[in-house]
Length: 198
Image (cartoon, rainbow, N blue to C red; front, top):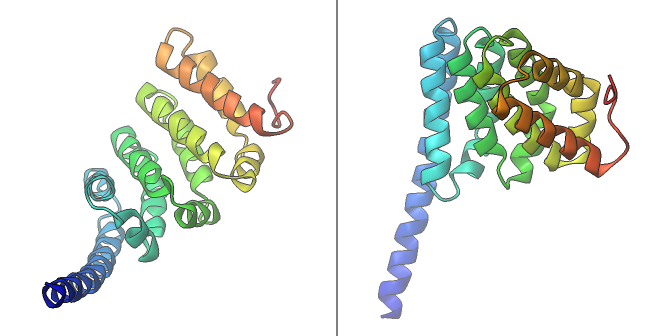
């Protein structure tokens, strides 16, 4: 029985190594494809959906994706598809999954400027309520990550963006709710953020 167990462990380890190599190769191909089809919002959205699905389905995939460049790919997508709300929403979902309970990915996302990319999408898509809801939700998550994350949000005027959206969508309960939750997340950690009383 011990010999059989050792054989199983060795087999599992070889599968993991092979799987990691496949992830790296896949992400390399996706990175090139995203650059090549940068004008296709539909393609960019599908890449984001793939990343989200893999994070949800495969144990440990979040870390493997982060280690192999997924952060750069996804933030790059957010920077390219600001003009398309559905693609922006799909990208925000992928960002949320990459950062979920993964400190390394969170730090990498902050360093890559994820907050600025999301806020740009929200400002450009102010006429799309679904983008405002999705954006506030993930910004609230980002505000929970660290002091550095909250400082970045403050410096980028995230609260002002929130207030602008809330004023424009006074009758949209989802936007009002997410906006208030985001503001609370910013306020409860430290001093009031810049522009909180605008």
